[in-house]
Image 1: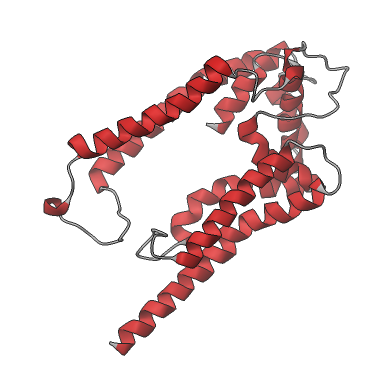
Image 2: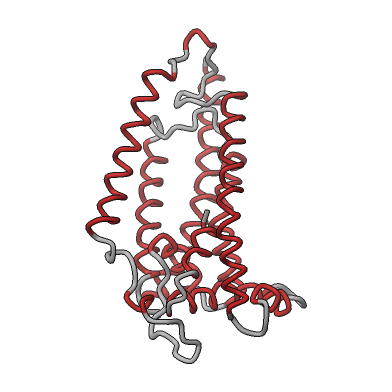
Length: 263
């Protein structure tokens, strides 16, 4: 989804679109030995040009179909395996709540709330989240004073921009994205819900505020103290997954073992 959004952001061919494509595609140069050749292959030449735009348009058209296939597969697995619950207990079919009308009404309500926010920006505040420089025709000879991506990329851009070492920054940024795939392996507790875990819930909300703060840092100029704060926030983002969650899981396991032995 992020790749599709990025490809679509390049298509207007404004200043921000052009230089965002320059920044993102140049990340491939960190690949040893063949990085620069891969960048030229993606560009379709030795610079970003019409061939690059044509390739990005084709991918932007095709990737939503890939997303749709993955979504359909997800629904298939959900109906095949069933979903979890906050208590972490296994239930039989007699104890389950039917989809109609309970969950259908909840889903419709959630969709309505989502569309209210979406249409508010679409109809009344179309310029609020964009950047005025993107209305300027792309010019490879003029670099914007401050390259800012779209708002939904700002937290990850804050991570990338704060770490001065290019290779390390790119690694940290991509790890911060794919870490969600490893979350089921990092959190092994039977009860995944934070409803009964006060300390874990507290850490989770700190993580959410840190993520929003990373978005704010990504929108600021790359100067002190934003760079230093970005480094701290980026590493806290990863520590939440690779340190805090495993430690809490271990603590819960030890606590449950202790009470079972007492019984």
